[in-house]
Length: 202
Image 1 (cartoon, one colour):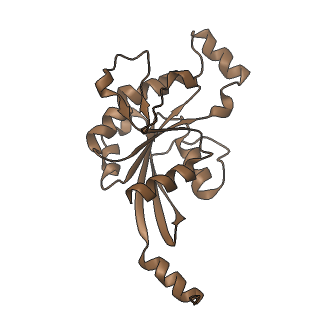
Image 2 (cartoon, one colour):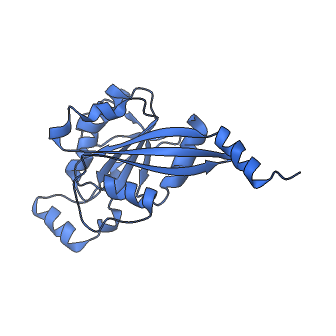
Image 3 (cartoon, one colour):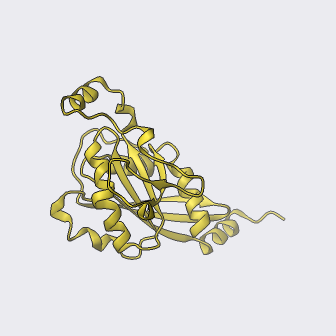
């Protein structure tokens, strides 16, 4: 027998879960835009550095609603002492970099992964390359060439079948210390990845 809508909704609410997700990365790498598009369906027209913002959205897994609490953090050094406060009780961390900014990718290894690994041991991590639509932008490419750089390419990220391991070849990183993360590029499939992780871990 089909349940009345009210009863069905009550059943979903009883099984409701909350997931706290924190997003980190260099300032201006695309963190806020990623969250706003995912949570609100709108791309910000202007860049305004975030300090600490929170967005809430809901996804449905089976017959259960999951409330995602999305915490946007500041990537600037001025907030390095405050940012760890956002890691408390976190269930999932997104580390973002800008594919047109090699330094933001380098900082994944130099700064962001070590910080997250220290404060969030055992917490699932998703690495996301943002601004992929600008990878072939002529002006961006030209500016990078002036400093003998180029956009981050797929070949700079090694992916294994049993999850994802990231290793930047130019970094002096021991094979035993390869980053154990889920790697993804752009936000197109972010909901799919979040659903998969929520099903596996929550």
